[in-house]
Image 1: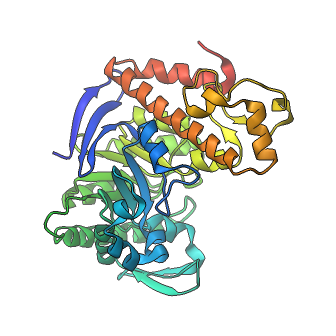
Image 2: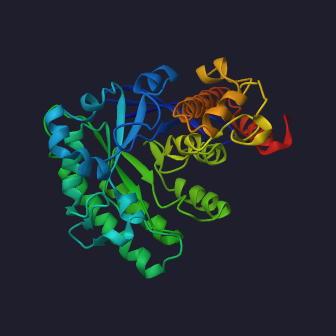
Length: 375
């Protein structure tokens, strides 16, 4: 069994579960730090392990281009290459198809694109993406899909959906040919843009293909928050309860809480590590921009309630100094804090679900995080 539901909140769709993956069990709901290039930026794998992460994300598109599949194959896969001993989910590159639009062309066969690194030309097909992820040794593989922006026409959204479904079927067929002893699990991705009937059609077609897990794509791509929440709730209702649900590309506390409330088990985003490298850090009372003048003489830790190694040792004043001096230690320490904050938040969420108190936890957290204080 890939996924086992352990607890169900009585007032929402929030649930605790266990993902049984090749490199060990993962408790859900779970946030995955993003390690696009075989590293989570500004933090060591050892520190990630100490914080408690058992699942991180790599990107097939970027790793395919650099260091290249030949290097990763010779190294024995992504785990050995990067010395990460826990689980890895690899995105297929579908989002890069979306974000690097000037450099690619899409047809029935796959994606023809020009490398953003050296300008060389490449083709990724659904089959090739599966083969690459098997070489990587991914514990969770993603199908190649087409992610679309929120302002396209119904016709273009339909075309993208139809290709995504056909690619999903080809991906599943290729995955079924995997080598003996390779147990990576394949997830399909629901698309359909911001059209309800297309979302429903995409979910129905993917359920017929019958993937071990299922992801929601095409959200958090620039749409307003109310539209995100509306389509998150609508799409999540279409997913089978017995499979793990993955919402791609979210990493702020408010979005995470909305996802958990709708029965999402897995999520990822570069946001927590990206803002850390720019001097912004999470606290229970909202984001703190450490570069501000008001922290020049502030001897308090980033968050007095935080148990991370950064908060146990360093002051806001010192952190501000590091960023103003452009010292590399600043982004490193802030990244440790932000990821520790989210891991602690996920632990608290799991505890609240176990006690059927998720809604109360969510409301209290957001009330304080939004600057309104503790209820």
